[in-house]
Image (tube, rainbow, N blue to C red):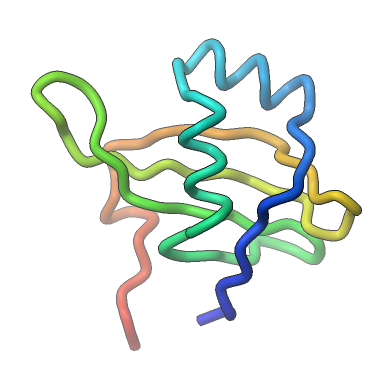
Amino acid sequence: MAEIKPITCYRITDHAHQEMTRRQITEEDVAKVLAAPEQIEFVREGRAVYQSRLPSGEPPKMYLLRVLVDVDRVPPAVVTVYRTSKVAKYWRTGG
């Protein structure tokens, strides 16, 4: 598993802003995941997925918030963000 490195200084691309609005994901939730991700997955050179499980909705249901980040830029750039109920599909367990 990759070392978890929090991101506190970053830029959100126009595309990511549009998707956050469309998917009703707050900047506060994105900031939480980037500052304290439960997992990080490197999908290719320079791009990582920061992800954490967060409750959402009424009644609350557990979702996985995935934040795709180009980490090879200064500051890192949030490329897109989405929430999924398919936690088991993306969640890596030990081993």
